[in-house]
Image 1 (cartoon, rainbow, N blue to C red):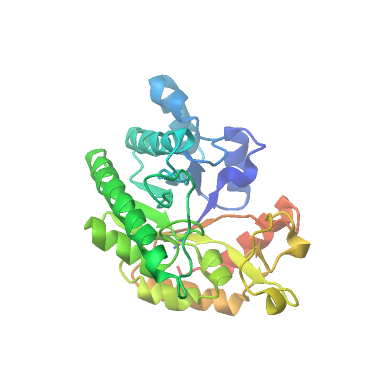
Image 2: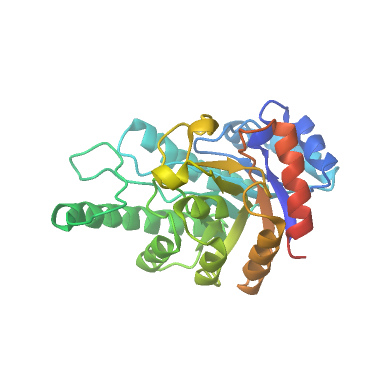
Length: 313
């Protein structure tokens, strides 16, 4: 495995300054947002698509530093039935076209979340039915039908344009949010170009065990995010794991995204990466630093140090 960095954490830096910053940590691969809701500061998709000279100069900056693109990220909700959702869907297609132009064969994205019915415009994440199955199930059935139809077309588009791996992140408020829902999508679409971006932070926040999750995803892990979550003592014990508060409101939350090693200890991370490799993945581990309990510099340094000590090589 090799370490990469999701570069949105350095959104205040120019493209070249960002590359130098990443290189200063001893990291030679970058995951950059080229679509969706990310900052897109370091990957101006429209400009690169329109100007061959800019595209060559862009790649040259990587080459002269001995660096490479791990993946292009286009995370968003393309199934939101509104103008914004249409823009997100278009940005995902544009990301694929740019990846083809840059020679990148892997994209990272999310599955999306439709509205509750054909008459609705609000994405609706069904997480529990309890005794309400009679009126919840039609919503779930509708959402899976919409999701499957969209992904069959998008997977085919990706194949046509040289993408070999689509790594879907199991993200809250998305149809694919855990191993079970991932397999439902892959099997319903029927295309193994679709794999998972295994991000343990989300699974920890659900109360799952990402090590066991990795075993359940054998052969389908196409990308890994190095990201940790801490279940907050004295908060989760009272309120449980669900939390709607803003991620910046760290002191009031039941759990927080934290620098790697500040949630799970290094022994846990060593086992996690060992099992991930046992399950067939030996690619990049991309640090996604979203710890708002400390400075960006401290969070990146802490995480890089922890990941360099624990990833399987």
